[in-house]
Image 1 (cartoon, rainbow, N blue to C red):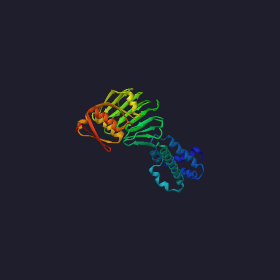
Image 2 (spheres, rainbow, N blue to C red):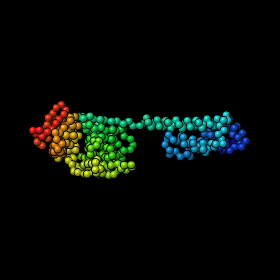
Image 3 (spheres, rainbow, N blue to C red):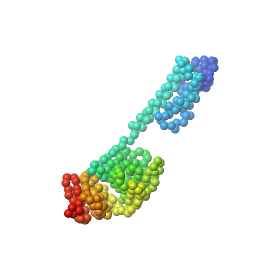
Length: 336
């Protein structure tokens, strides 16, 4: 039997359309070594024409279902009991197994190639310096957490942050650097800036050098609402309660100094300053009266100085008094 004729008969046979004489010819053909090549070519051609844009885990099942619907109609099902047709069935089975393991290897390879995620968590009273895979540097604050890949892939350089950190990002215009902080994303190409993003608190992004884009995820979509495009000396604050953003001028030098352990407060409330001191020094600060926390003061705090030094400045400026008992600090009005 000629090869082309044998292939056509094989298709008719698998579809159950052969008459008695054609069935006899196919039966004889299946006993010859070249039958497997013909069947392989048939399967290969059908698979090549099959759309392969489906996810890997569905590819094998969908192709087999399509092949059976195309070639193996219901009238043919009893024919699978014939021993000599088992050779063709075995070939289809082997191809299916091959596809399964091929896809399995690809999936396993992807899992093996999956980039490991690293996480650094600083407790209260501890700060750290982290070198990222692209040589960017992160100065992670106290009571803060950062999650980042062991190595960056071919797309964007993406990390997530809870807390506060100062970033010095290596320039790479083809691979933007994105920081995820809840519903807000900060995107840069190469710059230095500080992010303050504690859970339940207002978020702020302050720029020391370069340009920074800040956006908010639009619920239920992959789109971002632009909040601000910042340049050095600018800061955007995102109010969690009102869902609004405001841009202000800030001291760029003060932003840079934070990474070296210096906090700059300009007309800040004593309550906000106390929250920062609690994280940096791992203490608890209580106020005798709530209104004390609303007092405002400007000062520079060096993290290397004893806490008592900073408390002296605050209390002398606001006519307050403090007491230290272990790690508990109580601030009262003088004479209180």
